[in-house]
Image (cartoon, rainbow, N blue to C red; front, side, top):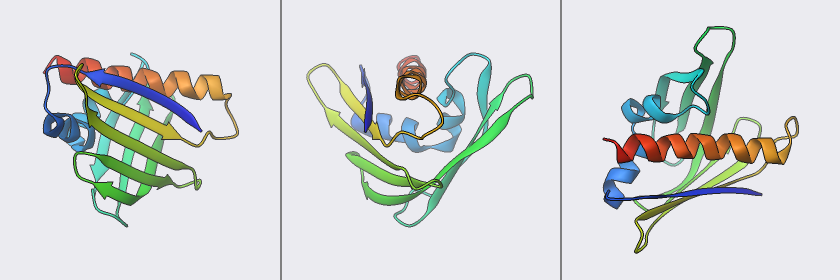
Length: 135
């Protein structure tokens, strides 16, 4: 299991939850580098329902859908889902003295190194932190 995390300052738990799950916000932060973006996001935030986020290179050379089915949702606290390739993802939200701690734990895929996957997911989470703290 790979873990990435961040702490969001000066935002409420409800704001962090909304920015993390609302498609209008997801499209603004869900990319690992400046040469990628998320031109489309759909989210049905209910157990048994799905989400699909399109990740695309800005130059149009490559894109893919990141999608999954929700297995557990505890509002303002926890989200669990299974990706199309059966990998499990666990996201937790917790108030701390420093701010709202967001932790993602996920099963690695078999194509890229675990270090590369951790770096990429951390970059996306860092984009989330930057986006929410500046809005």
